[in-house]
Amino acid sequence: MTTHKEFHARSLQNRDAFWTEEAKRIDWHKPFTKVLDYSRPPFAKWFVGGETNLCHNAVDRHLAPRGEQKALVWISTEVDQEQSFTYRQLYAEVNRVAAMMQALGVGRGDRVIIYMPNTPEAVFAILACARIGAIHSVVRPCERLRAAVICSGKLAPRYQTLMHHDALAPWSSRERRTGRER
Figure (spheres, one colour):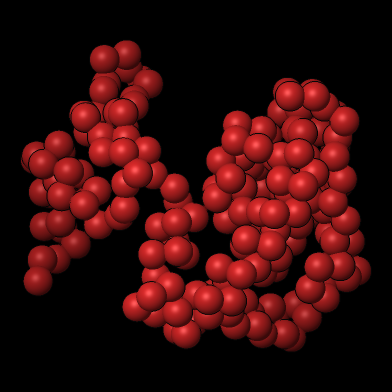
């Protein structure tokens, strides 16, 4: 067993070999051709040419061996509640949200703002974006920050997922399209 220091030192001494080995720990739809392209510092491109899906790696690949194990445990000291979801339950919830987003016209490359508190539903929305390839930004409830992000026009999301501040029951949220065309 290597220590954290040894692990870190290995990552610095032989970066490409280290990250090639670590990349084998996840599923790739298309293998990468180069670990790192640092030809234009400070900009870096990692795993050049490779394609993966983070939702698949976080949820789907665990279904067969660990479907009934806990995948997500939410504990709120603010409202004194706790919820747990197995990989199978998480998979179902993420697919439900992804289908809802797709029905609203969200697709690969679209920008989505997730304006929700730290709840399981926020995790479902984040993973749903990853599943369908939508770019997401998470904004925690703070009206000034929300207004600054949305009104600045810089992000220009196609879709926003909002949750009422006073409602923490599952799917007491409102979804709306922003009217932006693809």
